[in-house]
Image 1 (tube, rainbow, N blue to C red):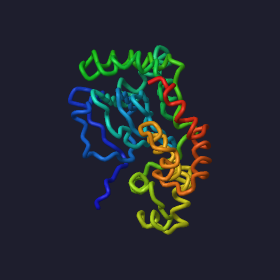
Image 2: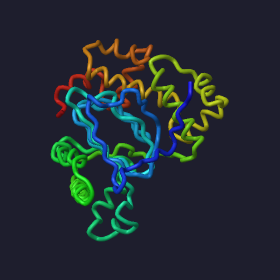
Image 3: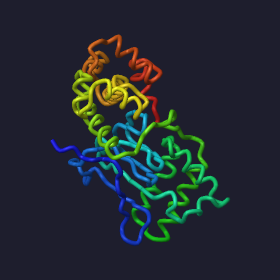
Length: 292
């Protein structure tokens, strides 16, 4: 199997533009394109209207149901977002360099709020439903305008995002990441293997062999690169998948636990509460109260 080299993703706006905008719908999403662990100097704004998927940004793992609005700062590693778009759903992806209007444009007093927004985005910002609803149409319109009009509209959107208070910092603990080609390639191999096999036991021997390392060397490398042990990350993948199943299926909590790779139900309950702050039964009970 040929492993894709993720590393630095090169963003190519169309000729004559410094802003990359792509709108995708449930009909034209490329299901053959696998998500991969990558980073890029461009700031990334992601708006999903009617979609479901897992977020993996820096050290943050979670599942979103229905829609999301996220701003990801320069060189913050992240994985693919959308498992699938629901019927009539769409995703708008906007990418631009922090200095796309010149080296000092955002250092001016008038741009202070947006400059502060860019700083916060280095740890990824998740905007809450009210902001998402208010700015969703404007973000979608970015794909319909070009040139000067696109620049002005983006600035207006960024100013609105800079002013709101209803947001959450996702990668709150920061992320230790060395942006070297071989390191990024190794991390991608590890994450892909976890993503494809987390429902069964993954031994340290197995995963260390995938990246051609001894077990002690792999454990040191992985902890240094992600600030987590391999076991902790695998369990987080499992819990995030459990939140997905609790949201989308009527399976019993015990069945969900076993389907996510937990052979011990009490261990699942303990980890679920540690990760989400509530029991699995309480989590499921509160789902109907979540504002979509």
